[in-house]
Image 1 (spheres, rainbow, N blue to C red):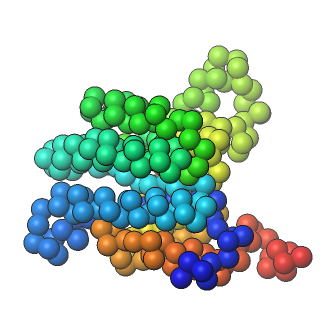
Image 2 (cartoon, rainbow, N blue to C red):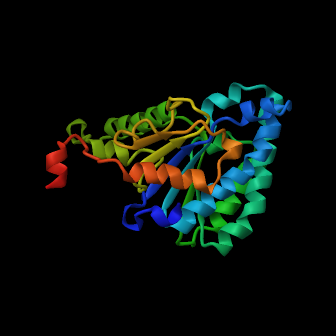
Length: 245
């Protein structure tokens, strides 16, 4: 499957909504956290697959602002799993020249998770290969609200004029400033919605939905999504004739 890909048209940035852990666990007759634990291999496969294909940015929707409302036992288990996974995967990231980044309200994370995340980001900060971006305590509406507040503050302080606010100014105040918008967004588990993920950045992103539950996601599924992406004509509001010319 990999050989069938056009290496000149590999998406520069892929974003993934990793969905279906709970349903996967339920099918096994287990607790939801069982699905979260078994999702780690899918994360590894996605990262290694993206790195091998030459993808520059991989954003993983790991924990939304809405997820804080889940049962406290599940939230605690997820945070513990986050700490362990980050700790365990730093050697792999260093070996493969992978840089770890994050977007979201990371100040809201438990101290142990915050510190391990900061440590891993610092350790991998000089790596120049694939950028893995964890969206943690993140939502698109939260991000846009934060950006609006920061811009309004600058206007009130006289640092920015109202008439100077452009789409680029807005983009420069987002969590993803300096990062290209995703070209491909993948959502697993058969759901067809964005779930408050990268609402600004996905304006012209190609979307791929698969019924595969996230714990079962492997490299071949990533390759299948990229193959589908490469069959599409990206027009950005233009006609097909304009794109071809």
